[in-house]
Image (tube, rainbow, N blue to C red; front, side, top):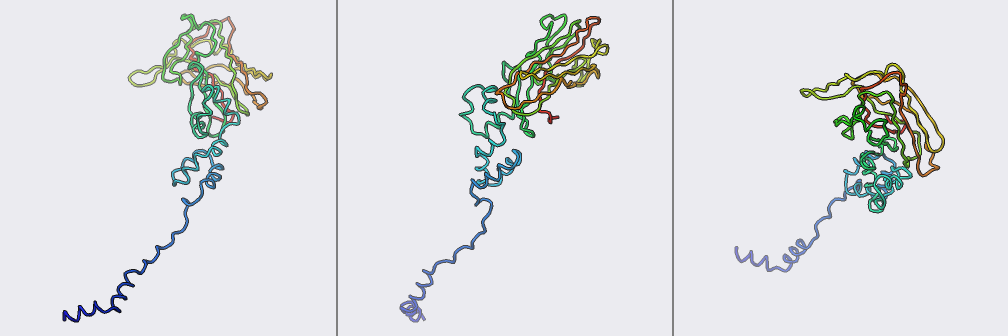
Length: 293
């Protein structure tokens, strides 16, 4: 039997058959269908340009192609205000726009960025693409602010600046403000953020001391607004609802984009000296695109 086995391996025909079987190539793997990952980044970027920022960020998690396309400058430049370079220079200073890609510029502008010595904050509203601005009480000209018999700056967690101006009592109430800023085109509203009473915490619960609140129901407070291109708005209201922060609407103004920046002047007054008024917290002045609530 051993002889027969050895002779079969010695047979050249058998060896040729075994060799051909060993050298035969393996069948090719089945072809896979193309998927989203096979799309060119340039094509994906054109699609992302039509989406809003939150949708872009969600799709960037799909695969490498979408992630790379989400960093394309033209995708994010379409989400930025036309004058975003002026905004960057005003808020961050010169030179930063050349160091950041457009996605990083958008991300930074969407934060509440503090500038002008910590007295102002500006950020981009993601929904409307407009700029929001907040001016602290320390950035306003308040009559009598240096006399502690009338006004005090008190710390609080209820302000984004961690401090509000508190009025104990005064005869002549007047608050003025002025600033220049490169607002993008659009319609904006200006508000004063006010509260009657002084809030505090006791045993972990919020309480409001209304001891000094008086005089605001006798005559209304007047709000006025002027712009550098000649617009004017005014309003007036009685202050009420102690213990709650209220946004008092001073007026609206329109930015048409013809000027590089808009200068605003505004005031809040109650100068009837027949009576005193007091117990008011002044937090800040806010400027919002008109459609932001």
